[in-house]
Image (cartoon, rainbow, N blue to C red):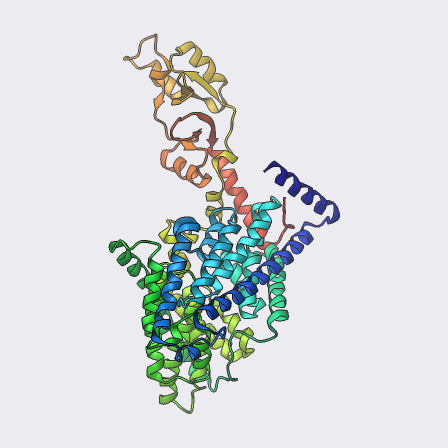
Length: 597
């Protein structure tokens, strides 16, 4: 461990000598993270298709066209066997015995100083690769976002970067992964700010854009200039269509709410049935295989089915059937722990909802309609915006894919309304719901989240005055006069905290008729005062001071031994809060260059 630390310090010192500008250093690191995340995305995508070829004999992304020629047993056995492999892998090798994804990236950025395990990122990607390759009806973007973020966290960790720089590199990994997935660098950069980091900061914007462009360039060099979806050119025929787009946005929001609310129902049902965690993905795979006998488009990521809808190859009843079938299997897969993301499923649901809605709109107003493929694209953006909590990013993805301004405005209208419905009835995105299930919320505010990451050990004072339990009044008076902030901490023979004594406590003792002249510190002290532990957050310290009215609180080593190691003063806690606000404001406005070390 010491050898690794020494090597990282040597690298760090060399970088400081060679490059004076920390902004330039951060930009170089962003390029490195962007290249790692972009390369990781390519490996993940190719690995997924390789696994798919093992299960179904084809590496074509339009998997559904080949499934119709396969025997029934293979359609059912493929996802089931894949689920069994993934379930055992997750149970044995992943922390928490669950898949990891975008919510864990948000968790790391908001509550854990951007610390993530690179091993967990790679293992989660492997689990998702097998899961999606075997037919899980989930998405491939979430796993690569998690993996890319873990690369950024790894580089920040080995270089011992400050919290703000580590968050920026984590965002670089996210941006590169999204950009590489959709060939959309601008959307990737904004997705990192909008979803992963939860805010826009000028100091982080340039490095994140560099990483996003790097990921895009790498994938274009490898795959060519093609985009994720192919579709004919469509233009908005009339602005009278915008009320229809608005209505589609509301329906998209309702769809997103229903899908997300169904997932915990599946989880609770599995819990009540006491289904083993390692077996649940196999059960989900069995359901996917059975539903896939009727609708093979729902097996796997589903890009082929979306492209068919964009080319208007499906009828109205068939799209409705795919909508309900996909919603059902997505809830089953996510609720039972199949590894994968929610981006592609949201796009698929939006495509079928938008296509079905556009079919009706075209039938009723044929002269005004732009064709139901345009509604398909708008629906994709709207449902994805609501599920992911990313209306700006999804709108930009559509713009970068189509280059059509009017169509982008339509997506913007629908996405905003869908997000409003989701926020009103679900309380936030799918990722926010996942965090809420863990007792976390990104809605506390960035400054409070920062205080939750900072520990009382960072601001506590180690110089304080103690007095033994058996000490008499003369010594108590003398020590109290010289004690910092006029407070004594009473400890027993094992250095455990018994209580506190202030001037007020001493005055009360002096006039208490029940106490004689031989009174001891243990009798004067207020026993069992409110305390903090070294691992508690500064946010907890501020809250406890507000609740108790105490200006300073003792800090104990841990709950078991109750050994006192310091105390926290209200002034220092509020100073930390003020500094957190100033740091965040400076970061957002770009007032000062970033501090890396």
